[in-house]
Image (tube, rainbow, N blue to C red):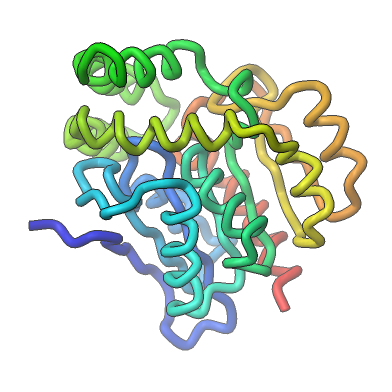
Amino acid sequence: MREAWERLIVGPTDADRSVLLLPGGACSARSFDLVMAEPTLSGFRLVATTLPGMAGAPVAEEVSIPAVARRAGELAKGNGCDVVVGFSYGATIALDMVLSGHFQGPVVLLGLSLTTPDESTFFRYAVRASQRLGRWPMAMLFRSMPLMARSAKTTEKHKKDLIEDFKANRAGDGVRVCGEYLDYIAADRDFAAELASSGSRVWVVHAEEKGDGGLTDAERATLEAAPNVTLVTIPGAVFLIPDEAPERTAAVIADALKQAS
């Protein structure tokens, strides 16, 4: 039986700086393989973890965003992590870690969605329909994800790993976890303003064309005006940022590590 919060660790145990990496929905810790292998990050300790309910990982008793963020904060502290990096769903966990005070260092948010309009309509429909009709819409979504992996701009080995992880997802767990995620970003809060006033050093990374996650014009304007926030745009359409743009992702993480105290 797989362990909850399984980890993939790269780098020396006595490294001066450490990073916690939180994957996106349906992905496992190894989705950060290519990022962790980038020379820019050599010498740092990189700790990737599979989040509850993702890629077949066990589901914790409570999977609300605040509950998962609290546990991720404990993991960051236990591993002496100076920077937290999250992609998509993992970026929302990292966001709550900052806003709730569970982590106070620099954060890198890849493909972050701050409100419901930022998220994919098809994804939202699959989750909400599954909550009303049963898990079959979510099961259909998971069955379609290997097609996205096959078209990803990455290595053949990494595509194979992604496909295996996508196939390991369980529809029931996905509905439970993703329902909590959609409830969180639908809350009556201005997350962009909260992030801008948090005082934490933040990097928000998105694709130039619509990819995974997005920002409204108002959210972008708020973040662009914040002195503690750096917006990074990756050229083209990129749906799986750590998998398709590992070099650019590693460069942003390296910038964040320079700001870690």
